[in-house]
Amino acid sequence: MRVKLKTRKAASKRVRIKKNCLRRKKAYKGHLLRKKNSKQLRGLSEASKVHSSDVASFEKMLPYR
Image (cartoon, rainbow, N blue to C red; front, side, top):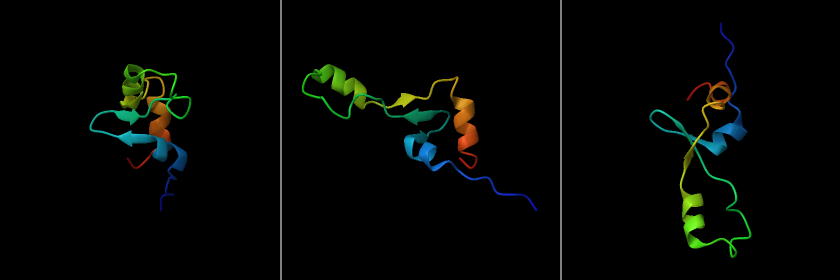
């Protein structure tokens, strides 16, 4: 009998699994938005890929993806 691996809930809330990559939200969109221009806010709204150096650790945190 194998032991089930646990999913790290913090990682599962922060990362969405797409077809062939892990997607995350960008930082700096939580507050102080009046001083940021609309072009910057649009860019921060887009999803971003998880960096290649972090993918292995996220895959350990999300065993049943």
